[in-house]
Length: 120
Image 1 (cartoon, rainbow, N blue to C red):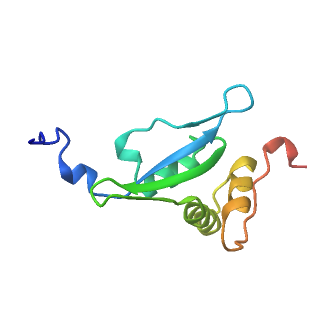
Image 2 (tube, helix red, strand yellow; image 1 turned 180 degrees about the vertical axis):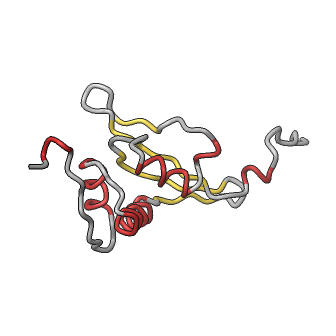
Image 3 (cartoon, rainbow, N blue to C red; image 1 turned 60 degrees about the vertical axis):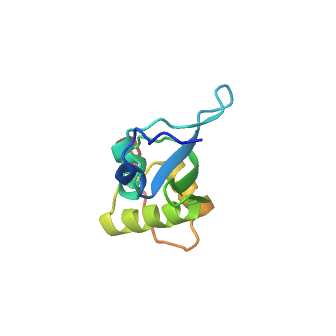
């Protein structure tokens, strides 16, 4: 039996991709977020997390279809987020801070920016 060639070029699949599992609350539960192919690399996921695209991330999985592997990348992404937030003094939501605290493997010093109504 001959297999058909893939309609997706192999070079588009031979890279590490990241997907985010997000918690939508008690009524909706968790779901893997739909995302544009261009935003599935690590940098795209980090930018989307920092910009608030994902409100309540729970788990992040990385995979490479051509190499045939997948893994839980949650701690790696939490570490990268913490580093980015500390280096750039980016404002992060309390939910994202909770994600980092729960999943980072190292302690990073981060200062959360308070909403304007909290400033005296």
